[in-house]
Length: 275
Image (tube, rainbow, N blue to C red; front, side):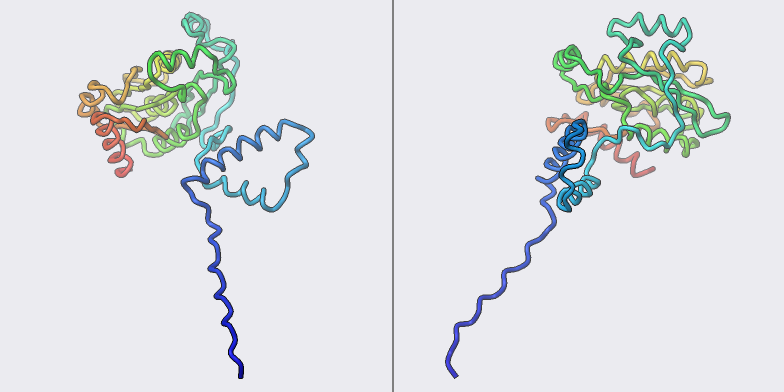
């Protein structure tokens, strides 16, 4: 029998799992790409390959905005013009235009005793302007809170409604609240002693204060106020011991976090673990 050269070993199978560190960014770009293509009538019937469908399925694994929320709390839009005259005057008197045509008023009917309603005025999703960017640069903050009422805020509000007993007679601080839906819901449905709704963006806090004023009759004896709060300042650290509960949804900070910011994050994590 003659000798033969052994055949090479088969190459190990390549893993089909994407590198998550790099792929999340590309998947997010894919979401943007499909959103742009969807606006073109000539492209709606194109790119239906199995590979494209697989990529579309993969996007379910990454964090992204669900534009219509999760329908956890019944809500409907109301014209700004339906606000009471005093509320409308207060809103229109705001120097940044709160209550103008770029805003929307959403009425939330809370799924709890008495079915109280909470009105939240916030920006339409396509109304971010250059002066908003200029303001964010001036105050060294971002514009996340102006973009929309984020679905994560709705989830937090729904959770708080269903765990209302933990807030009874407590002092509550909401961090990075955006337009303040969760804080407003806590104040309207849990018999908390005090609720402070905070954000680092002064423009956002103006909206929060207007929303507090609009819903004042819904809060009963609960004291509610707004606050500009930057996590990396001494003030934030000093406040930790003055609240019974700290809540936050979908909050993040820059890599250059101070020790005070880290303390707040630790407090947030301990609360989430407790929940």
